[in-house]
Image (cartoon, rainbow, N blue to C red; front, side, top):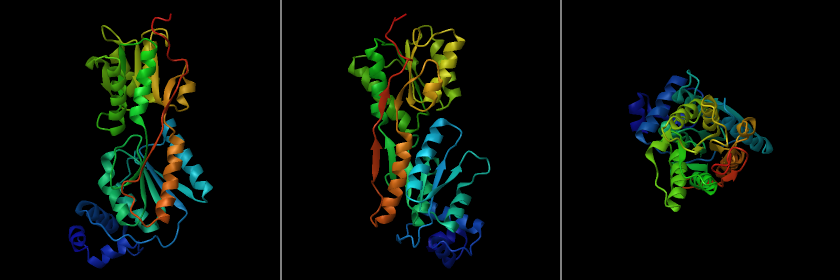
Length: 331
């Protein structure tokens, strides 16, 4: 505590007040203490939360996509069934500050926090655990943090299923649009995809592998690149439904018809799949169920005095076949 106090430029009693959620500490001071706790790796003895607040915080990178809305819907429904509510914070707002947000949570308290973020904030997230607030990572986009509980999906299996389906349709020149390569889920989806090709004694063709943001623009950019190759792919696996939607637009601009000219598989199985024409074949990861499981885990951790370290739940993915894939040369 002395090290934390020195780094934050405050007294040891002030650090103690922050740890105990006292209200007589300014937001600026609280933020400095929390930042010092995170940077020094301070760990406090876990104490039971004296009283439930009835609130669970969900911190997410943005709420403007079907992917995010399914997560929030699942979390809200699960919390409501237990008589609680969720508080949603989007980090894409320009005014968002993680230290300031941590300070506000420390002041008002929370029954738990579900983070739907990449690795960027992991060091700050650990400060919440030091404030006796249970933390669960919902990581369809993030990595694995061994010190925190997590709920994820079988991304490797999903990538394998997508490639296996296209191979069964006779496609061998298959493009891949991945998410940002530094994200664990993007890496796992590619590894599953690659494993399916290797099982058929097919080599990965580097020019057919691209990475971009998990959004429509990313799919359009990577799709345009793949479809403009001298020998374009006959099928493409996009690592998100939004990427697949961007790929549809790139195909339309080139007067390519799906699936007769190009088979497409997405990932997530959001409502986007049925809005596209033809309806998109996609790997379903149960986003709402994953969020509900994260809420359940928050309550379980609050009822259990044992550490959350190593608690990880992986929920199964499955391929939902629609009209965007067809046998090679089916026209």
